[in-house]
Length: 90
Image (tube, rainbow, N blue to C red; front, side):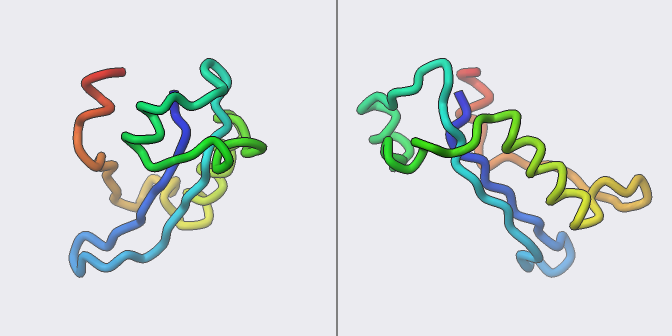
């Protein structure tokens, strides 16, 4: 379950960070974080309590992407993950 949604907009030529997006996500399936989750992520229960649920965060991501011009079909962009651990276990 997604509990944090960070994004960097990175200039591929200069490697400079041009913009950031970050929100915590209120978990729904497992509303109480396990000790394993906290140890793995450093995220504690207080950081996700009262935060928007995933659907609301995705709406904010869409707004951010539109503001940054990333939804323009003429803009070249690519998504990159920070490792593949999540992809292997999801």
